[in-house]
Image (cartoon, rainbow, N blue to C red; front, side, top):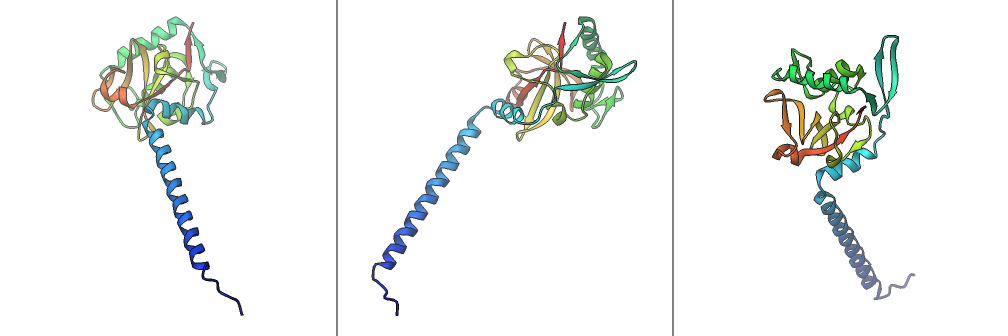
Length: 202
């Protein structure tokens, strides 16, 4: 017959206390790490998240002989870039239309796709989330005219526009249609994620 010692219940109780303390310490550590993560600016978190994703370093471009692959950022002429700025001016006031890709109405990514196809014959992905994976990531203080600017809600890319310089960008706004705004405006300042560079003006 096995002999039961009076110390067995004490040992079991001590082990239980140790396990509970270890679980509490681990929980506190996870909460602290989560708090540190959420305290980082949205742009830092989004840059980190998207830099880890597989990024596209080339894009298709329509040529007379057919589509060809081009590295990004792609060199474009000053003349072609000015033509894109003219296209922005021409489309100002065009209404917002979900899924729109023509001058009958644009959504944000449809507008970007239209501009870069018309001005540079680039065949860009259709959604803002897909566009965010094309080209190198650019921080806000290093943006150049022609860069794409992305905005996030809930740490997911939800909006895209075209940076035109002096803290301003053009986009398809749900309220105003094709318009320009500044990155300093409260909503855009707090929801800015990052920029990407898909063209480089010669």
